Amino acid sequence: MHDEESSEENLRILDYWKEGEVWFQQHLPDGVPWCDEDLLQEVPESARGEFGVLVGSYAKIDGQSYEPGSVVVVESREELRQFTSGISKVDGLVFPWYDRIVPPNLWLPYRRKIDLHEHRARIQPPLLKAFLITCAGVAACFYFPEVIMLALLATAFYGLFPLIQYQMEWLRRVDRFSVDDLNDRLVSADLFGKWLTKKSTLWLKVALGVLIAVFVLQIVVDSNSRNASIEAAALVKEKVKGEGEWWRVVTAGVMHGNIPHILFNGMALFSLGRVLIALVSPALLSTVFLVSVVCGSLASLYFSGAPASVGASGGILGVLGLLLVVNRKFRDAIPRYLNASLIQSTIVIALFGLLGAGFIDNAAHAGGFLGGIAVGLICWPWLRLAPEKSRPVSVIFGAVSMLILVAAVAKVVWELWKVGV
Image (cartoon, rainbow, N blue to C red):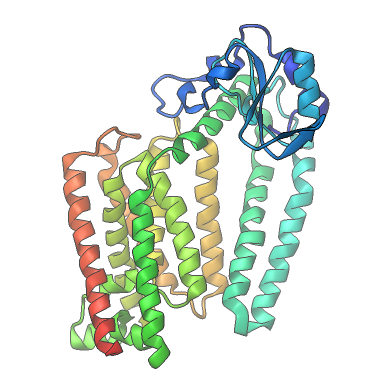
């Protein structure tokens, strides 16, 4: 439930829902794929035409136990009010005149504009907390260099990300939004999240599994000789320039340096990749990843002083760059929070790179990011929002890119196998 509504208003949810009315139906725009009531969970046949509750946590009321996910039917509004007050978490409400379970975010609409002073007062405590955590994390990076990677990851997740998020919220002039604007955004954001979770991520999970398998093989090889895997197939500059092993420009993008490295990259690739797959095309993911890996490797090769480079970061930054272009083109349809999240990620990664400049290849990051933006600008005239089918040319480029990436994985395995034996 949105925080701007007071707790007193939230207690009157059941009084707000009038017989036969569903307030958010008027805020479902045409032509937006995720603004569809079918995304809401259907009311079970046993609860049709009744008041009910979707239980969100284990509860015991009057000797009766209830499990999460169960729909409990009651006879009246008053019984519904009493039942919901007795459980700690409610995941949805059922009304006799509506065949969908109403999730918490859609229980109440905004009924007044947001007061900017109140909004900022609410944000101030978590903003200050995130700032202090960030300062402590930065200090840890300088005073404990032996654990700088872990310190950076902790700082990013618990400090930088919330700090940028709350700072953007602080600066946002929410008082300029009309009540209708606020409700349009509320409905769109809630349904977008549900729509996104219904999109298949099977091939993305397969790709992550392959990256993990390659990393495990690296660990096995490196257990016999330190950094042997890096020498075997990563972007070792002297081997590329001096010995002509240009295949390393691609193979470096499917390898990683350590556990935090692959952990961070894996989470980033999954979170950004699933959005790209849903918004544009699954075929475009492999294309932009490959192009961005190559751009990142070339940037590292000519603009970084590090003797070797490894990691999928360039490709992941390319996905982020492409998503920024996609969000720009479809800015009137895509929920605003996604744009804020992408900008937040860009800022955090940039700061992350500055703090870890001693071991992070910022040239590869920048090259991959610009490569993704370039792909987006080239594809701009042909981009469509959540198409049912990908264009044939996208499928062809995606298939070719996938084959190249598969060949890169095979090359890495072969080179590591030679070192291992």
